[in-house]
Structures are given as structure tokens and as C-alpha cells.
Amino acid sequence: MRRPLLLLVLTCVASLAAPAASPAHPERPTVFPAYKVVGPPKYRTTGTALVVCQRDSGARLKRIYKGRGAKTRRELRRRLKLLKKCRFREIQPAVNAARSGYRILIMPGVYTEPASRTTPFVQPGDASKCGEDFAVTEGFDNTAPPPAGPSSADPPVRPNRNHHIKCPNSRNLIAIIGDERLEEDAAAPSDPVCRRLCNLQIEGYGKTAKDVLITSDRRKTDVIRADRTNGIYLRRFTIENGAFNGIDIVETDGFTVKEIEARFNQNYGILSFTATNGLYDRIDGHHNGDSGVYPGSGMKGCALENHDLYGTCEKLGCQRWTTEIRNSRSHDNVLGYSGTAGNSTYVHDNEFDNNSAGLTTDSFASGHPGMPQECFKWERNKIHSNNNNLFSAENQQKCAAGGTTFDQRPQDLVCPQFQVPVGTGVLVAGGNRNLLRENWIYDNWRWGVAQLGVPAAVRGDDDPAHQTDTSNGNRYVDNRMGVRPDGTRDPNGVDFWWDEQGVGNCWQGNMGAGGAATTSDPILVPGCAKPSNSAASNPLKLGRQVPCTAWDPKRNPRPVGCDWFDVGPEPQ
Image (cartoon, rainbow, N blue to C red; front, side):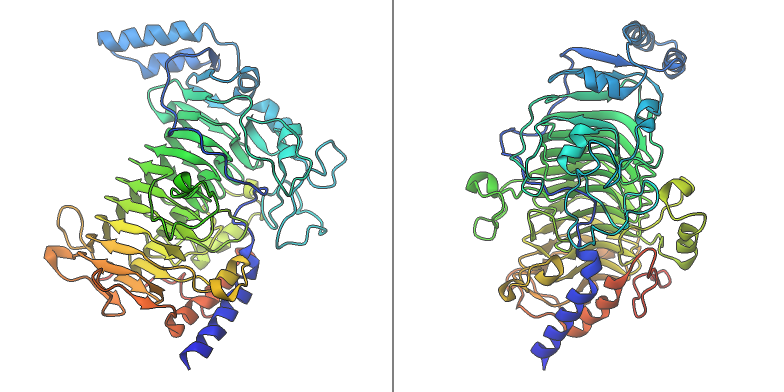
């Protein structure tokens, strides 16, 4: 009976998940850039500099560098001298004036980009040069009237590349467009090539990220969009109030985002999509409706040697990391980290805390190149206290009150944009050949780590041979579970939860407080000397997750039978 019941559950999952099986964010069809860059770009002190400032930048500099030390006074003099070269009051005009290899230096101040804000938010069918430049929205009725007002969701309408070229500030507060060739067929994009604004460096010229604030109107989809901008380097500023993303990096080979605070965005703090050779360093992502950081649709590291950007790493193994996240903290979001098709990510020495869930990677949403997800290495992270129930009835009522659009809500109100099991440290929802090693995972009241298979039908692949192609070859090794780094016991609800599907999965060397055994469901999990060997999941376990796929923030915020949004008491 196990096989027929499993097929029934898979059918239910696929049908219930259909509304969510569209791409997880409003992006046009994209492809991976040709791999040419050796690695993420490094910080430069050379190159033509364009200075952007506000009228109070000088006063702010004097406050920031207030002190009697010789080094402090010298730095203040240097920056005041540079301030005299300021020619721009807004960042977008400086971007427009820049060329490849330039540096844009932003003096302390608050940047609202008035000219960009007044650029009309163009909808499909508008009588304008870019009103028809929209990509096909897979999974949605594109003939339906667009939502009232400039909303980036419900349904997600995807401007194609021509739209961003012709009307760069229609949906972007700051647009950095590296390739201005118009597409003849928006559904079949050309190979990504950076032709202008390559190796551009934009940095805040204060002491910390808080000294330069770039704030949007909560109507523009992206605060900063970097599109085919190979070698982009963004550093030391705070970015907020994107109607979808704070920073959105698309089809880019080589990027660094460093010392950036990304907050109060409707979905993602910092997102990279079909971008490779990337580095997230010293990021503070918080109060975002999806995740603080999102390295999605990552290039698979094995492809760099195999020259097959869309192939599988199964035969070659995980040979190289194409995106790195380090020294960062992501907190008070729905998710600290998410990444559909987040392949070949090296995530280390970070802290993910006080989110609804800490980290997820998945093969869930359609429209993401690089499926199924493969090959992360996550190690030496602190993943704890992810019990912030932003799906509570009270919070979701607040999200529905006072208008339904993002710009009508209080800035610090975080409204969930994607469903997660609250109280979870790590969720691998359909991933392969991943390594979770030497992390501190504690005080997550549901699951410390959970793994479940996701049928390919959920992402629009109905091939019968692919329905169990995820949750294979994952290893959970030498993690410290239910204990803080100082040795204090702080248990998870269950350390390891597994739906029992997959070939080659194993758990080894994981320990609780004082060297105690970890807890798991099932009670016994396979070790790495004899890993798992079952293509079928436990249908009862999978069946309990099915109702949660029907979640919708407006139409069905509390699906019947879903227990993801009810967190039990703190484990003792």
C-alpha cells in the first residue's frame, strides 16, 4: 500500500502547490552568464570617482569624525576635501554619467532619489514606450486587469529586459543596466553580456552602513537593480523600503555586496538571481517579508569544469562554490536565508536568528534555472531562536488592515510573502549533495534541521522519472545541536526531522549538550558508513505538509490542517 499512497500524496502536493509553483519573485526569463570572471570583485581605490552628496553631508562628516586623534582629524580633512568635488545630489544621475571602471562615492546623508520617484510606475497596457514590455507570467492569467496601484505582487508581473532599458526608473529607484541591447524575443533572452557600467564600484563614504541611507517610496520594485553588470561592487550603506528587493543582482558575472544593512523590504533584503562569482560579506538583513539574503538560481560549481551550465553535478560532485556568504547576520525576517535552486553556495561564519525560520533551500518554485538544487556547504554558522511567528493570526490581521499594498503599511510591520514552518533552524526542501557541517543549531522550537523531498511536478516537471530526484546525497556532519557555543543547553524541538526519502543521505558526528545524543524523527537515522537507500518518503509525514502548500497571504492565511504557523512551548 505504500507506493499507491505515496503517489496519491504526490498528486495532492502537486495540485495544492500549483498557485505557489510560479516563480518566487517577479523576474523575467533569465539565463546564466558565461563564466569568465575569476572570482568576486575586490575593493579598489583607483578609477575615476564621481561624488554624490547632500546639503548636510559636511555637517554629518564632522559629527561622524568628531575626535581629537590625529588619524581622525586627518580622515575628516581628506573627506571634506573630497566633498568639494561633489557634482550630484542623487545617485541615479551619477550612475548615468559613469562608465565602466568608475567609482561612485556617496557622502553621508539620506538619499530619496526624487527624480526617480516621480517617474511613472508603468503597468502592462499603459500608453507608453515600455507599457507592453512585459515577460509572459507563467502560471498566471496575464489578460486579467493589473492590480490597482503600483504593486509588485498578486500576481507578479514581470517587466522584460526591454522595459528596464527603455524605462529604467519605472520600477527601480536606482537602475544599473550593463547591457542596453533590446531583446527581439523576450521569452528567449540573449546571452548575458556586460557592455557598459562593468566593474562599477558604489560605496557609502561614512564610517558605517548607517551613515548613508538609501530609502525608497515602498512603490518601486527594486531600490537598486544591477542587471548584467559584471564586476559590480556595492559597499557600506543602508537600503530600505523596496516593494520587492532592496538590492537585486541579475545575470551578472562577478559581484560583491559588503557592509550593507538591508531592511524593511517587502520580500528580499539582497537578492542575486542567475548571478555567479558572488560574495555577500558583513551583511545585516532584517525585517524583510521573505528573506534577508537570497542567492537563488545559482550556477552549479561543477558546470565550470564541465561547461554545462544547466547540467547536474551528480556524476562530478560538488567541485566549486559560485556564491559565498560570510560574516553576516540575518534576523527578524520570515527567513534568514532562502534560495530556490541555490546551488554551490558556501555559507559560513554567519548568524541566523529570530526569524520565522533560519535557512531554507529548495527545488520548489518553477521558473528558476538550475533545478534541482545541489551542492551547498554551510558550516560554522550560529542558527538559533528562529521562533518569530510572523504568521500569527494577530500579525496577519495587521498585514491585511489599513490597505493591502505595501506602501500603506507601517515600515516595521513584516508581512510574510512565503510560507515556512515556524520554529525551524534549517529546511532542505528538495536538495541534493549538500553538506551541513560544524554549525551551532539551538533553540529552534520545532525542528533544528528538517529535510523533505519535493516532487518535480511541483516545479512543473511531470516526467515520472524525476518525481524522486531530490533529497539525495545530503550529509549532516559534526553539528552541535541544542547547545549554545558557551556550552549552555538550549534544546531544539527535534534536532533532525526527515521524511525518510532519498538515497545517500547520512547523519554523523552530531552531538547535543555535554556530548549527548541528538534527537531525531525517525528515532534512528542512517550514518555515513551506510547511508539511506529509499526512493519513497513516509507518506504520512509528507501528507501532513500538504495543507501548508495552500497558504496564501490574502486568500488563505491559515490553511485548514496546516500546523506550520502554531509553535508549541519552548522545549525543556
